[in-house]
Image (cartoon, rainbow, N blue to C red):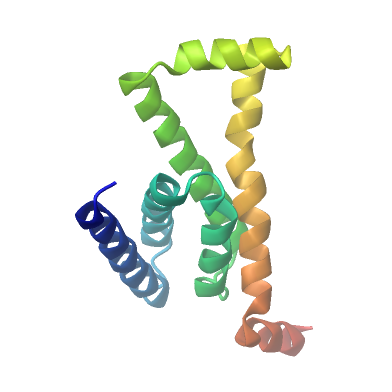
Length: 146
């Protein structure tokens, strides 16, 4: 990857983070989820699958005061993953890959695709919960309510 491409990706991630902070401040829930999906897609292009818990943690930190942040982050990760699968299916050879992977794992391709599709929500959701719990304000708010 060329340095200019990497610089462009980093700039896009920073811009996405700024927009995410703005969306969080405005309490615009659909905007938060849409920006989270874009952030997951960009991060997965740069870092791969392990970006899911990292981005989930960051989103949990940013959206700690939001109600249902874990569900929003998990669904955003799932949506991003599904969009990446769709893009690969259109531009790549996802069907052949899934057939070979399912054969190697001795599973049906549809079952394997379902399990793989659930993976992002299982990685990003708990990481978002951890991030939300790490915010000092969220702990104070929880102790005031309880």
